[in-house]
Amino acid sequence: MALFQRKPQTSDPINYVTLGLNKTLLFVGLGNPGKEYDLTRHNIGFMCLDEFASKNSEFGGWVDKKDLKCHLTTGQMGDTRVMLIKPTTFMNLSGEAVQAVQSFYKIQPDKIIVIHDELDVDFGQIRLRQGGSAAGHNGVKSIMQHQDADFGRIRVGIGPKTPPQIDSADFVLQKFSAEQQSHFKELFIESNAILSELSYGSPLGNETRSFLV
Image (cartoon, rainbow, N blue to C red):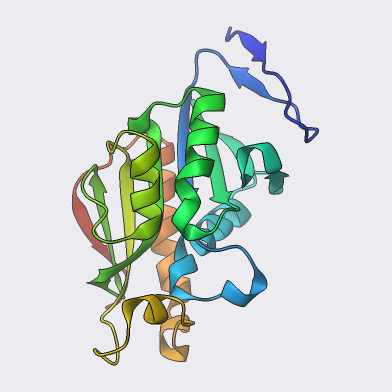
């Protein structure tokens, strides 16, 4: 029988009960807090985690963990405790939330997987890899400033940049086009499949998944 251990509470009331013999996996969705950023390309990490949580009854509602600088929800999938977080810092400070959660729950870097937008990948593709550089992404760069770079990446394509001369910072803060939004169903089916596979023990390999025919 697994051993239970209660962890100290932060200032927000929530029961922290961990299964001592179980694995823990942390999914981090990147984005900016605030309604004004809804449906923007930079918030696709938030959107994918919201969809994953809503489609799996193992997860409860999101809890605002002010001490950990994130919204958090947890669920048990097989023998893995899966934690989902959305930093409540802005994108450039995402590493502060990841470090806080990682430290509090004693999560190893290779058990952290970050899902985020990727300008160098075309919309319709999702690329997976373990480790690597920030590739100019400020949220990933912030995480790397606070911990080892050996965390997983789920890179959701938002490219190509159109028009080409637009500033990249302006492009990622624009909303997805109506055409792209019409393919959100396919995108979320694919992202949910990836997150489910990882939750139930599939290794994170270097591969590209396509959701548009």
